[in-house]
Image 1 (tube, rainbow, N blue to C red):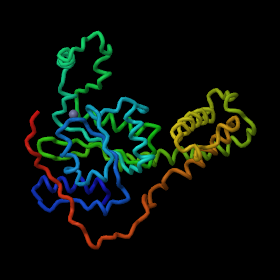
Image 2: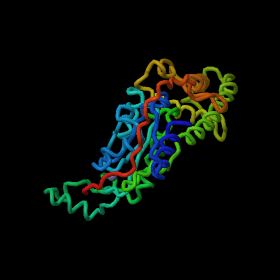
Image 3: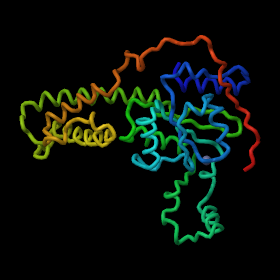
Image 4: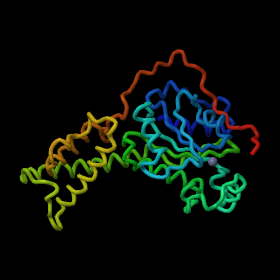
Length: 306
Ligand SMILES: [Zn+2]
């Protein structure tokens, strides 16, 4: 059982009244810490560690109003990216919550609140809803955030990206986006790319010294593939900026079609996990004795003042 499968199972068992439901974080050491993005709502402060069943030492907690991702290179994306690359985050989770005020506040109400703070409409950005990330569905907002994170060049394909919805009244977690499934899908896509790149290398070796910039192959698949490959590689190089040593050597010499494609294959072999049939993580002997008591999942939050 993987980390989030265990989290969800323990949460649902606790909801069903099983007082012994809990998680042994030590069993999931390979998946910890996680990077979690939540809303700034103060009710989430004590609740999130309890419903996840892991201690605050085991997750890197990012918060913004409405747990919003505004773009693949946004400020929050930057923090999520560094949470994984620098702080060792193994999985990402976006946790939306019910009764979110970013969702419930209308534009008129928002303007009224600003006015009460002495902030007039004309000093606010014109696209006020877009700027403040106001959304109309908490669930859609989580789905959108997960999609942006999954496709951001700043997040490696090996990092599962999950989406949860927390019912703030009951403590129940709903698993909206299963990052393990997405991961498998990405792996399949990657295999296609690698295969395509391999064929490209073979085909293009006959065009020695052929420069990408000069490439004009109207209506040819090779041209399309290489152009896509070049775009893709450019994005990957950008994504690897904090690890320049591992970037494929495309800047030292003018890129040729063949060496771009070779770069892709090399990159794939180096960075992408092996496809199905190969264990994702090195199995580790379970150091289970003595077993500490599980961290109980609490699902009956105290009544909060709004
Ligand atoms: Zn909220």
